[in-house]
Image (cartoon, rainbow, N blue to C red):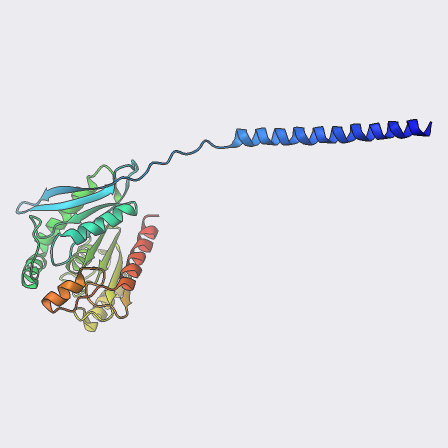
Length: 290
C-alpha cells in the first residue's frame, strides 16, 4: 500500500514538473513571437556619394568660376557654406576645404573673388589681386552676393541656413561681409587680418563670428586684434577669438611650408592648430544649424 502511495506521489510530482515546463515553454514562445512582431524593419542606408562640380556666376563686370561640393546621394536640404580663398586665388586648397565641408553634410561653394578663376603665382600678384578687391568694397560685395545667390538657388540647400568661411584674404572678406549685414548665420575666419575696411555696427552684424588665428602670426598685429575686439564688443556681437600658440600665418595649409621657403615668408603649417580650429568651426556650425 505504501509503495503504491509513493508511486502515485512520484507520478503527481512528474506531472506537476511537466506542467511547469510546459508553462515556461509557452511563455518563452509567446515572448519570442512578441519580440519578432515588435522588431522594426531594417533601415536601408544609402552610401554617400560626394561630388564636386564647376559652376559659373557673374556680376555686370566679371564672370567668376567657382566649385560646388555636396553629397549626391542625400535628398535632404542642408545648410550651405561659402568658402573664400586665400590671397593666392581660387585654387585647389579652397576646393579641398569645400570637399571637407561636403563630407560633414553641407553643400559648399568655393568662391572665386578675383574672377575668371584667376590665381597668383607670386606674392606681388597676390597682393595686387587682393588689394583690388578690398579697395573697392562695393564690387567685393557684388561678387560675394552673386556667390551667395548661386548657393541659395541650389535645390539641395536650405536657403535659410547659410554660413561662410575664409582663409587669409578670404577670412577678411567673410568678416567684412558679415559686418556689412549680409544674410549669413555664421562666419569663420582662419589666419585672417582683422583690420577691416568695414567695422561692425550694432544691429547690422547679425552673424555669429569665429576668428581662428596664430598667436605668432606677424601679419596680425596685437593692436589690430585689440581694436577688432573692442569694435565687436561695442557692436554687441556674438563672437569668439582664438589664438593658437606657436602658430604663424597659413597654419591650416599643408602647402604653406614650401611657399614660405620659396618666397621667404613666415608661412608654416601647424597640424595641432589646423585640427583644433576645424573642430572649433564644427562646434559653431553644430550650434548654429541645430
